[in-house]
Image 1 (cartoon, rainbow, N blue to C red):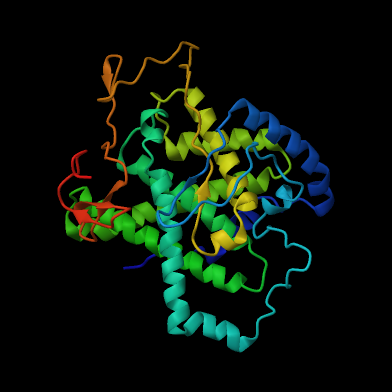
Image 2: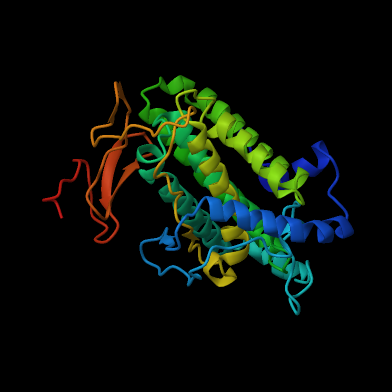
Length: 358
């Protein structure tokens, strides 16, 4: 079976396919306008301040109580591989040939890359599995939308990995391969859980990979093409959300689409500029708060009817993810069989946990 392991060059696709990156002078001139536009956008769609750690055994990195704005270096970082090095950081590719070969081929280094890639993927998976997207945000709970949410959060981490310009840049590119391998393995398990015939699993996986590639390419295009234009970039992100995350669902109000697009901008800033290097190097990801979906209105400006606990909304019925007791998560075996595990006790079981399970 052929899997797409060529994501090492994913960050450069936007530069090859679309217009060239703006010059440094253009980027500098646009950074002030981008910063002001970002502040207005984030202020209009508050997300709160408390980050949620995506790994059960680690503390989240400290964060400021204020909303982030676009940093002066943000415009450069929107370009492929554009996370600027700090003063005093080693220049790229300063490791010896022996050190690079050891990082690539030694057993311990391979084990480390696999573990780190897995941790980063689980961080993206847990954030994408938050019930807020489907309950408060009214995002339909089906395979395509769920996968698009996972792919979106994997893309955030992918951009951080390819942006590194330190002597470990080769290492991060190899970690990126492990990150996408974990995504494909999880996708295969979710495909099997849908009950498809085993002989068609690989075909469906290729379709999922193609969908993922389109999402990542469109996001790359949005940030590369409109690096110095915050307003235009937001419009493009609205299109990304509408086409890929919501699959052009007419039942989702534009208000929700706009808030989701603002979240993409906000989370990009968080992962690229606020997440400390030492935390990221350990696979510890503190996501920003999920969007505030309160007081949403429909496309005619009328308040949306409340969503009941069982998913009923007005005359309709919305499918919702299962509400599990605290500390319990849903997982899948490689065969696609569902089981549950407790992130605190590490206990796993086949039966759905209840409040009495503990």
